[in-house]
Amino acid sequence: MSGAGLRVDTTSPVPPYEQIRSQLSALISTGRLAEGERLPTVRQLAADLGLATGTVARAYRELEAASLIRTRRGAGTRVAPLPAGAHRPDQAELVALARRFAAEARALGADDTEVEAAVRAALRG
Image 1: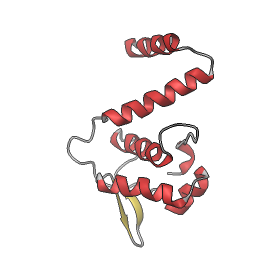
Image 2 (image 1 turned 180 degrees about the vertical axis):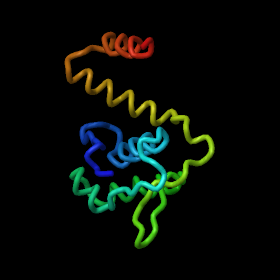
Image 3 (image 1 turned 30 degrees about the horizontal axis):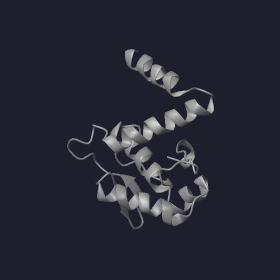
């Protein structure tokens, strides 16, 4: 896994470490990052995203506390086996995802009504 799939919006009110944490959490819980898959080092991901190493380190610490990743000297940081019940996104992850969508839709010129209509259309399939 490289940091290329992660995006951090430095203008967002959501702190960068939380954006990283929520994106990685979603990738892990949906299986897009498989058990045992190696994550970039803190230093490498920070460089890829243009952030301080402490920012990425905090995201990794929170993911470790949630038992989503494991770091071992010599083996690096890897995706841990999913804990029971981890397949459901939490409210904070859904809100972060909705904020990113709303911000991108607004950047295209959409107003709140158009954003809500797009979400409803997406839910209908």
